[in-house]
Image (cartoon, rainbow, N blue to C red; front, side, top):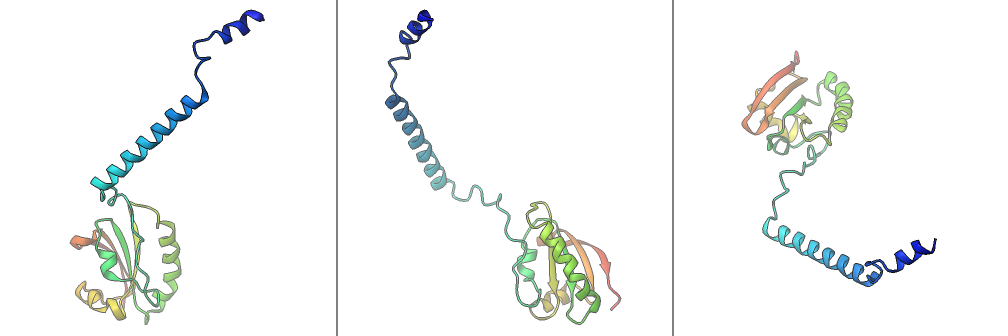
Length: 153
């Protein structure tokens, strides 16, 4: 038993104090912070493509801004509705739940566009005249889409 205690006392690490370890850790921390600051200064937009924006900008009456929805390359399913369409009114809560389910998914987006008011000219240009209409935009910024459902109105 005494030999083990003597070995620990004569160990080469017995002279290393906690202050030296603490100083070494502080130096590593300061160097790490300096590297992060330099990286952030020289590469400010490095991670901008990694952050996923909110799915759509909410406006009044469950309507969404078409510019915000279509200024992306993320595949997007758009539910086009009208306030005059009773089927659309009954489907909106289901699409709201679907949109909430996929809001954190960076691969897909779910959008709801009310073709009354702010989005009326966009819907006319996109030839949306039947409600409800659901389109799958593979690349919304290039207007590439496939119509999934087109209403009877």
